[in-house]
Amino acid sequence: MKQKFIFLTGGAKRIGKTTCQHFHNEGFNIIFHYNSSKSEANDIKKNLNEIRKDSCFTLQADFDDESSIKKLTQGLSEITDELSVLINNASSFYPTPIEDASMDEWNNLMATNATAPLFLTQALLPFLKKGKGCIINISDTLAPCGIKNFSLYSGAKSALEGITKSLAKELAPDIRVNAISPGAILWPEDEDLSEDQQKQRLTKVPLGRIGCPEDISSLAVFLSEAEYITGQVIKVDGGRSIN
Image (cartoon, rainbow, N blue to C red; front, side, top):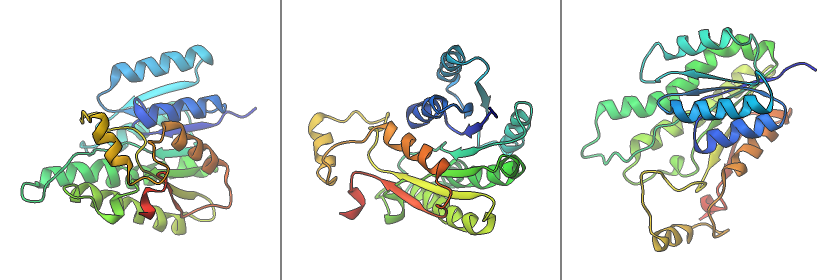
């Protein structure tokens, strides 16, 4: 059987880690990028290769570095020359109240959330065309509506959704491009929320509970096979966006 390769950015932790494991369970060979989470990345690589030999590879890059796209493309070419799936998952996320927001913060948030997905897609088009692959971008349910104190991040994710829809038109019919827009899937790592604070946030979610990473990874697997879906931004947010 022909090997299928997926390349995912930000694959060492949280949703990215679960997505790597889910696609691996579906028989894909995994190539994932990480920035600073080397230990976590090595653990995933070791575990997946113990399940199936030579089925998982890692590549390191910092998207603040303009040479990162070239570095990843070169590393990828040493493993395979075709891709079935590209998932742009890597993301920077932190508050930037407008009174103190800086150009450096804007450049960082745009680099990971919009610039890297756009130009990584450009660089990997030959791989995707040969593998008859698809692209899945990871957005954010609330970003297009605006998030108080997160205007820079919201702008970057909104740009990503526009890129998704534009590329879906430009790359059709050969390559499908969609986005997944998660809501509350995991609590932020840098916030120590009390149980009452968590409950308060969930009052805006009709399903009344937080999601899980498998809610995102299972949709990604579905979109990788859904040959008549392109240009869509699919919300996975427990109904949060309808409030």
